Every structure is written in C-alpha cells, then in structure tokens.
Image 1: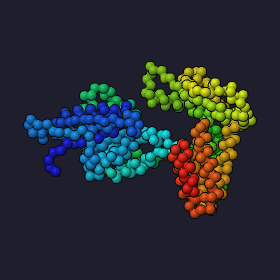
Image 2 (image 1 turned 90 degrees about the vertical axis):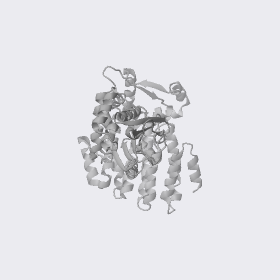
Image 3 (image 1 turned 30 degrees about the horizontal axis):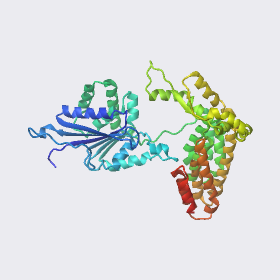
Length: 488
C-alpha cells in the first residue's frame, strides 16, 4: 500500500461540453507538476448523441526507475477509479451502474442538472429518472460527493461546463495540486482564458458552498394580484398538502386561457377536498394537465412568445452582430383544424368529404413556418389570437365532457375504494397531445375505463388498473395492453 500508484480519473461528458478540453487540461496539469500522464477517450451514443468517456491516468515521475516508463491503463476498471467527473446527473448514474464509483476510494464530482436521455424523451408516459434517487445513490456509493448545478454556474460565466467542473475538482482536494496550478493550466491553454477562469472560480466556490447543491428546496409558487382571489380560496378551502400543486395548476390554466377558467379547477376539486391527500394531489395535478390540453392555439401561442425567442437566442449564444432565424415544423391535419373551429363548423368539416378534399393539398405534407420572419410570425400569431374563442371550439366541448366523466369516476370511488380512485386519477396521463398521439392515448384510456365495473368488485382493483396503465404506456402498438387485458 505504500508503493506509488497511478491516479485514475474517469470523465463522462457529452458533445459540446468541453470534455476533451478538460482532459487535455488535466494531462497538461499533471505533466507540469511532475507526473507522467495519459488520456484516452471512447465515444458512445447509448444515451444521447455524443456521450463520451475520457480516461486519464497520471503517475509520479519521481517514482519511475531510470530508463523505464510506467504502463498506464487505457480504460477505467471498476473499483479502481479515484475520481469520477460527470457533466450531468444521468452520466453520474451511468458511472454508478458501471461500478466506477466506490465508497472506499472514489470522489464523485457531478453536475445536478438533467439532459434527458432518448429513452426518457420518447417514452409514451413520464419515464424521467428520479433525480433525487440518483443523488441518493451517488451519496451512498461515493467516498465523497461534490454535487451542484455546474451547468448553471458555467452559463452565468459564459463558458462551457468543463471549466466549472475543473473548479469543482480543484475544490474537492482529490488531486495533489493547488488551485493556482489549475489556473495556470487554463492560462496555458490560451483559448477562452478569461471566461474559463471565471467559470473555474465559480465552480470552485459552488463546490465549497453547500447552499448551491442540487437538493435545495425550490421556492414556493407565487400568485400575482390578478389571481389573489384564487390564492385566498386555495388557502381557506383546501388542505396545506395540496396548496403548491393547486397554485401551479391555477397559474398554468390562467396562462392557458384566463383566470375564470383557472377558477374552474378549484370548483371541480371542491367535492374532493376531504379526500386522502395523495388522491386530492394527484387528481389536482392531472386535472390541471387535462384542462390545459394541447391544441393548435396553444402551440402557436408558445411559439410566438418573446420568452421563446430569448431562450433560443441564449441557447445558441447569439452575438450582437448575428441574425437568428427560427423555422418551426408544422403538420396540421383536418382533425386539428376542426378541433379549433366552432363546434358545429368543426363537425361539418369532419363529416364533409368535399371539405376534406379541399383541405388535403394543404395538409398532406408538413410545412416549415419561419417565425423569425414577419409573415411566419403573423401566421402563428393569428392562430394564437383565437384563444378567446376556444371555449366554443369542438375540441374544448369534447374535452370538458371527458373531464366531467373522469372526475365522476374519481369522486364515486373516493370513499369506498380510494386506491382504485387514485389509479383512475393517474390514468389521465394516457391522454395527451393532439392528432395521432391523442387518438392512441384516448383509445387506451377508454379501454381502461371500460374495465372499472369489473375492478370495482375486486380487492386489488387499484394495482390491476395501475398494471393496465403501465402496459398501455409500454408501447404504441397496444400489444402489451392487449396481453394485460386478457389476463383479467
């Protein structure tokens, strides 16, 4: 144990985050501090395009016999890694899964922000990995955990996240080099020095300051003066456990339509105010989501907001001398056009073969609408301006009827079978989107609701309905749901 050995570092980063630069910095740092160093990299696309594993080993030159060279490994070995650096929380989870992090040895430096994997993005349901569980696993698996939102730190400094992670590594004390040695290495790099040093310093401080850790409690939602009446209703009519989800729902619906529409959320939940808190919470959450269903008006509204242009400009780091052009891919279909028309007109459009033939040339293929041009912007702005007419639309009338039927099931089951009522409330997650996505989800939802008469007479109705919902979300072909229904 007293013999010198290599210091091993595994760095997991995605394309564009500066992982290669950080690996080069560490090699340069080690060589200037009297070490022999080597770096390798293995690109991969398992999680998202560009995810790469960099591996660095450094061995003290003073311990190398004259005329010899140390043999350094080309890839990390589970249980034999001193430092793991992850540019994102899922990458930290992958390091845990590979066994690279051990409680006896490994310092884990990770950013707590999330960049969702393709599996999380393309799942029919909410397939996001629980960030809190990832952090708990990291805390249990590592000898020492250094965790903060280093992506935000780097963004404020105007540099890639690699520089902030470098600062966190320096603050961790896992390497036998001082802060000044790290800073000199960045200066020797010669590219983006000032911004990198700012991000390095900010990352160093974030690693030392526990208040910047990713497990901070988010601030409570606030309702403004226009929603003060609804805020008062939330506080006086509903238990404290659901205040936060109700505030979020009210804000969402007021933004989606108007304050009177947001008030309907509280009106509809009033019969459940004395129900178990979990049932009330889940019903409130899914009711707010259903009441703010996606239609062409909502899509156009979101794509023409100033905040969207500002966000895109920030993401591409738009310079003052540059022009930004945004193209939105749109593929409206007759059903989606009928959905935003007045109910009678929308039904006529769907039932008229002539009207559908007239629309076909315009709806056969998708179109790119350039919202950065006046013509494209005004086109979507005109669609978004139909919001006051939404309550008269075909889709609105249909969705409100569906919501009332669903809520009636929840209220009827709340007292006698609260577990089944809870799963009925959660089954709403099948109903989302528009077009084919909505049609598939609604078909699965109807099939689940058709099983309620049978499930109400069983002791395990709640778990059975939960299994059916999970099967419906397993694939978009419906095969898994068919198998689960056959087992009832």
